[in-house]
Amino acid sequence: MSDQGKKIPIPKELTQAGVETMTEMLPQKLNGGKFTVGIPLELTKGEKRVALIPSSIRTLVTQGHQVLVQSNAGTGAYFTDREFSEAGAKICTSPKEVYDCDLLIKVAPPSIKEIELMKPYQLLISPLQLPLINSDYVQKLQSKKVIALAMEYIQDEVGTFPIVRIMSEMAGLNAILTGAELLSKAKGGKGMLLGGISGVPSAKVVILGAGIVSEYATRAALGLGAEVRIFDDNIYKLKKIQNKIGRPLYTSAVNQTYLKEELISADLVIGAMHSKTGRTPMIVDENMVMSMKKGSVIIDVSIDQGGCFETSEVTSFENPTFVKHDVIHYCVPNMASKVSRTASIAFSNILTPILLKAAHPAGIEYFITSQPGLRNGIYSYKGFLTNAYLSQRFNLKFMDLSLLITSQH
Image (cartoon, rainbow, N blue to C red; front, side, top):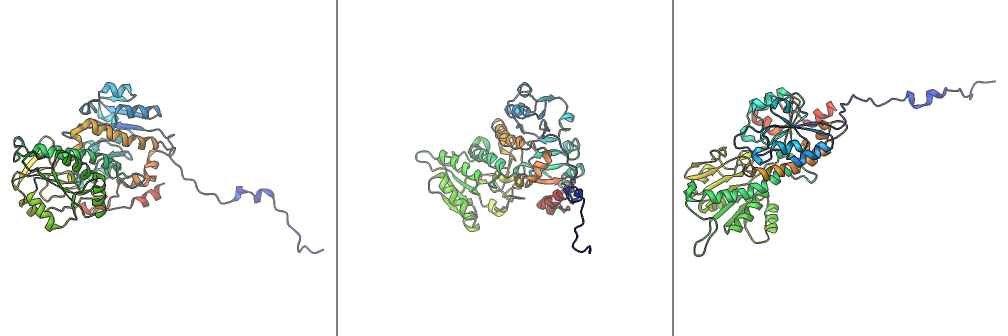
């Protein structure tokens, strides 16, 4: 009898999944989703804000996280060590213990001295403040292999910048109130009231940009009775601000001829431009500033991203103004520090939900790098510079963050 067509019995174990090619599983660092958060005392002059307030810390501690707060970190915002302690935070007298946490949150960029205290692969969340950093600063973060996340570039699910938005609301209101103060004779101005009174015309306010800062500055200026002019190249934004304010406004595209005409007669000019990735556009050159009236005021809210006036220079709360071409300049970064308690609560409201979601089984780093909105803010990752603008500005090597994450996860 022929063997052709006869079935050869195959052992059952050879047909089961045990011999199938399996997906290689790389070792993954697990920490049960718990992490330590460090809140250091801010050393930057004039900085009174704190990143997390006691009520937020209580929420994090309840979820099993540990929060370490350096003594007196909240004093400038009128939060005491006792309040932090009662919320469940550990109060540390030395910064060393705070800087040893998994996650470090600051409301001002760390100094070179503070970077020295950091450890490799630590996650840093802080503002970037482009005018205040240099090549040495960036390279120091790289040498420490810190994962640095610029909070002003964090995006939410709809593509907006929540930190920028809330700080911009405060900056817009502050810009008008500060401008009104600087126009007074006591502060070196021409002795002019921002809002008009019976028989006396009101001051003219020119606002560059039609975003959140502009919206809140416009509301405040109109509320005080000032005359407002708004410039922006985004026509959609100009239409949007008209609708939000609910009344006709003078708006214009950034036409150099029209802009110069308005600057010549302006009493207060507010720079409120914002860049999504790097330096803000500089749209007012020195010649335009020279054409402005003596005693007029410039408030460059955009100074955090380099400023939109050629004559702008970073100032501080101790020495907030300087005069150039007979024009008073106010260029203090993070104007929200002026209202430290309100700003601290606002910071905490935005950061706390992010931290609660970051309790991922694979670790906080995995969560941060897997969220496009958070990943957008990472500019230094484990020794690599991942921000194209900083790479061009300081002539440093750039690496695409997506490629780095793909190769390491």
